[in-house]
Length: 182
Picture: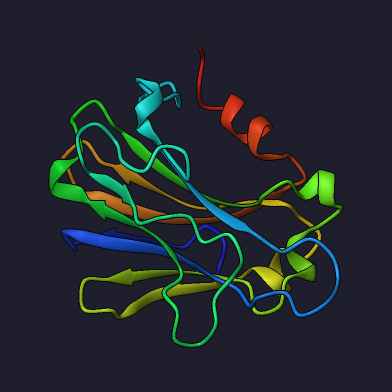
């Protein structure tokens, strides 16, 4: 993935997926969580339900749907952790959507993306075509959180995808605090 690459989204739906291999060695299992924040002009969620993740599987408007937490990784034939984005249902007060991958309990377990075999994030269109792929095991190896990309609403109501590739050593709680005020 190339940082700060931008292009217009013309799809009605996209899928944000995380894949990684099941841990085959001793120790805690690896768990990559997908996080999506629907943000206003102040880069904050309008309400807590605008943050979709394993404990809140859908935004109130139904535009963002988490298809379930995969806590152990995938074998070849298994479905990865996945979030669906329906652009036709996104409320007008949402100006940006930001997408994160995070290692669950990374600090407690002393884990990072580099320890997880074949960890990747994919954006897929409705026809199952990859829009892009991000290799977390390689490109985010020392981090426990990664702001993969953002999708921004333009003044003429188009959606522009911008790749970010911004890694952090912040845990899930610290990431959430950036976007939720209450």
